[in-house]
Amino acid sequence: GINTAIPYGIVRVGEEYGTVTELLNAVSVSKMIRENQDNIEEAVNYFINMIKHIHTLKNEDLDLPSNKETFKSMIEFLKPHLPKEQIEKLFALANEVPETNTLLHGDYHTNNVMIQNGEAVLIDLDTLSVGHPIFELGYMFNALIGFSLVDKLNVKGFLGYPLEVASKVWKMSLEKYFETTDV
Image (tube, rainbow, N blue to C red; front, top):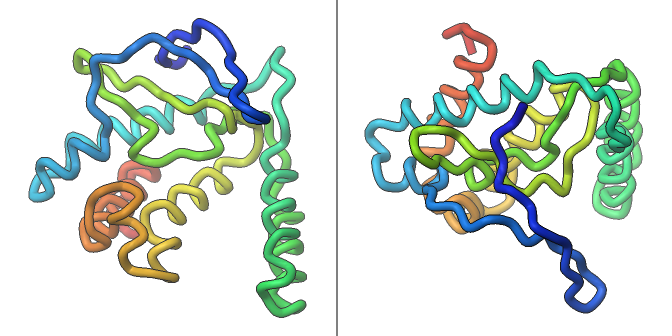
């Protein structure tokens, strides 16, 4: 029930694997935003309509990893970089998030949503998992805002548009996702 690029096979390059897919005649949501920074509403609509649809889907027969476990492994990675109290707080927060069977992309940002013939197409499904949508929203925050807390140019380098625009995309995304203007 998700529009994706049609996969044709798996390739191995060195120790890494990749998927060969159909060539899309599409433009990314990131490019839509870059090319029309004064009117990003259409791009945000595509972006959020896709993720809301994904979050309505439940994992029935697929053997997908728990995103909570992926998140906990990220916390493990941070151990040498953060004070012990912060690591403990992150683990406590992760443990409080209920397990759900909701489908998650796991790396959802505006580069991974393509628009082809007026329809959103999802790419880079290698992080597909299940879990609570709060994890997905956290990854979206990181791509749009979080990584720029380290260096303000990170979002520009990654998504191709400035932090000020990414901040608008984030706010509009939350408003559309939660169907509110109180964010």
